[in-house]
Image (cartoon, rainbow, N blue to C red; front, side, top):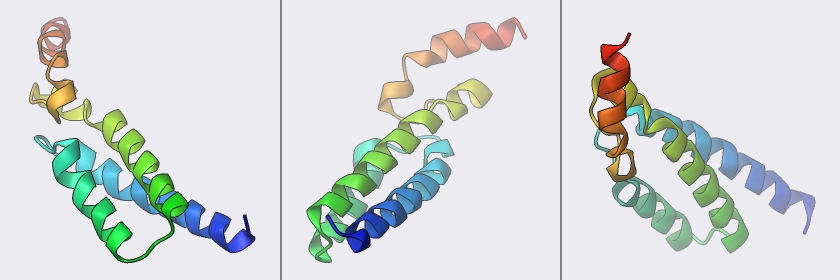
Length: 96
């Protein structure tokens, strides 16, 4: 693995993280609806598979870490997997 591939992987990871931190905070953004199209665009653009995998993993991690923010703030699930946290969020908000 050359230095250019590693540099591409780092850039892809940073871009995926930054983009999906912002997208993950928006209520109602499902993982499939927002991550799959961008990943498909990278694949169709001819990006090397290891760089696509790096982008995908960074995007998934960033999105999953931030999709609980709308639940904690407004009680609205950020994604499908954040739905079970709504009840706990309402209880926590009631207790301050």
